[in-house]
Image 1 (cartoon, rainbow, N blue to C red):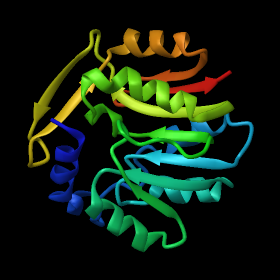
Image 2 (image 1 turned 90 degrees about the horizontal axis):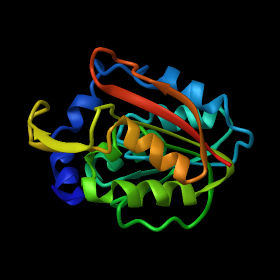
Image 3 (image 1 turned 30 degrees about the vertical axis):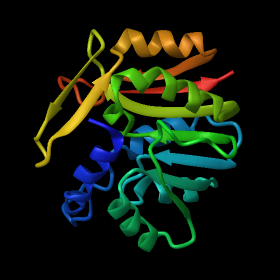
Image 4 (image 1 turned 135 degrees about the vertical axis):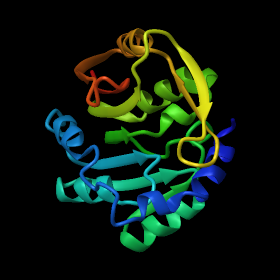
Length: 199
């Protein structure tokens, strides 16, 4: 599936995240862990920001100037209403060109939707987009090997891909990053997150 198709799928299910039942603490502890490694609190980017605004608000509270990026226009419409003074950009991260450098970038439950063939390119782009000493947190399927699949667990069919645990670690080492934290935070599910610092 192409990212624009993912955007159309998410346009159909904004209600899942825009519901009072959604756990707004999802991912917050992990982000606080990542932020603890940040040396400078300037610009921050939330890739696949969705509509909850929970990470945007956390970044504001922590002294960052956040920008949200998402491929779903309906998600962004909701997000903009919650944070009218924040810049939100509708774009496919595979095609998007960074216009500035960031001290913190998050891609929580988002870049696992891009094509497997684009994973390396997007990781390179993200690390290039960080200032030296900048921190990147992202979640992924912590599988033993790289691969991809689709499912319709949330309703519409959605695509997922992963370089696998060792594949991601190898990529970040080659990009000159330090692995600051790795956790299977929903074990025994393969949901995993990494915190890396650009050196």
